[in-house]
Length: 168
Image (cartoon, rainbow, N blue to C red):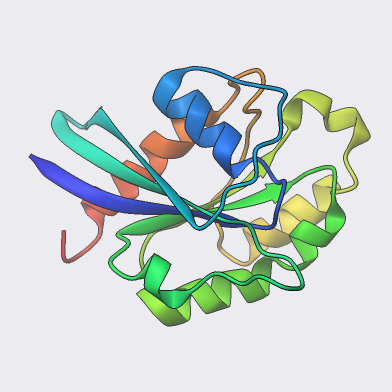
């Protein structure tokens, strides 16, 4: 059985916990629950005929007073960089957050996800912003923890990239 650590990183309130709850437990709650430190969930998935247990580390969000600790990222086989389509600032901060994650874990697979696609008409992040991220070579997906759109794809795409990466 293969087990892989996957970290959820991003600012406060982007929907990391909600994406994990939707993926692992198939639930969504309107209640906002701040993650303190790290919450770890696991889910068995099948990718290209291989069983993989994803150990999903939901790391507390970043703000002016809190930053992700390198110790929380160490050992990650991949990570998901979560942005909030309703808040352009989360998109603007993404390159720095990715750089800091890469400085800790190296060139592991990652996926950038713009969450809250169920309210896309209210987004501050534009199609041009999304294309700019893709121009950097980033895999960018859209998701909604509320509706479930793109959530399974997000985790399975990352799991597939992890299995194809060297040193697996």
